[in-house]
Image (cartoon, rainbow, N blue to C red; front, side, top):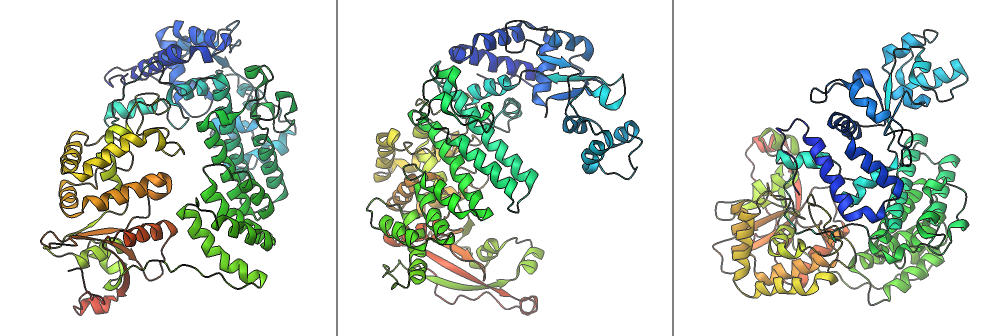
Length: 628
């Protein structure tokens, strides 16, 4: 599966044909007869008409003025559009693949027409009326704003529109090909331009994102709910208001149209298109999206996002209820501390205290959740008049204080950011310093375990344009590959890991992969890291990363300094903090890991050297000894 070369003027059509062929080959059983009839009709169109259809699908929106469509490789737009507006009986688009002069809402009309044309069409309006006020102004002027064709809106018979009539089918086809709605036909173009180089993974007809039609329906319904809520926030504004809260509640009701409910038990609001049970797909039987871990995770992600938004709006009790629904999900380490906080802010401190205490008593609690709850518990105890619990002393990280020129002075010298200013001050010819943050340790992990990350497991890769396995952040990601990861880690017990990583660094250069930023991972940095970091330290870091890839991919120290001439402690990791900065939880976790494994790491507190002091030649000063 390859993108069409860009010297083909209709490269995008060839790419669209690839998408259609793949979907028909691998997902034909997930399409209805009417949808298959529509796809067949598309494949039988003249090339110019198919090219025009794809051009329209690649543009933003569904409505276009024909006079504004100009594509040299297509030719006459009117001729190319005629087959598109021909009715198609027994298809998913009986009125045609496109509609000529379809009815437009006022908002759709405003999106098409420029301000000068609006002023010409509605001369009664004040000339100074801006575009953002046109909706209200035209509504007040006309009274009746029933949808109508563009010629009727503008009172201009020459106005002429073409509207894509595929509806949800185009999203459905793209989703079944890519396995997500983030990617689209432009990814083919990026691939051909060399901007998106992807690892080759063996694909087969079994390499598909969905097994049942209801899974596609559920995915689209979840995405529609997410988009509806996002639009509501943008339309109604951030400040809490009753209308926004009612919309949030309707979204939650639709999300809670649960697997245990039959299709005819779904509440009437929101509309049927938003409901998460589809009677047509299931013959009225209940759908249990827990049977599909991927969909269950997407549902949980949306619920967590809704709960966070409820917190921001001050709907703390509602937020706590949504967090409670995530107790058995992979989101529990993030949801539980937030649930405790929401209960506290709602005034239910006793329930918050009991919940935090019960969670901390569990043996299987993650370090992420533990740190957040331990921080909350003393505050809850104070609210209840209880003695504060005794906390285990956290491992200490050595600190140094470093004085460097302030940001403006450093920037004038070509040194941008507090981290690079610290690196410049600490580096010596014998002990180089690199700004790496999250770009070194995770990248070494990827290079060592490349064949495991790109193994063609079911549900991991659906097409040729993946930048990593689709299940990377799912709860079962590691368990499905546990033996293969252990084989990779066994290489750390011998010298072969260095050879493997160096060879992959050369062979895979520029290919998109999880955690790898090629522009940062220079050969010099790679060689220093492999020569100076003991393999046992790498293994400890890799296992910590795998414990929670989504959270632990970040939080690593900003800098690494190498001491190639030393016999021991040949490197140190340095977390840089400006005067007003503080450590985040994920950073504390990494520093705690380094302390447990006796890995050299320190916290560097920066103090600013004024421009006057810098001009007087005062040098940076360490208030703790460097590594030796």
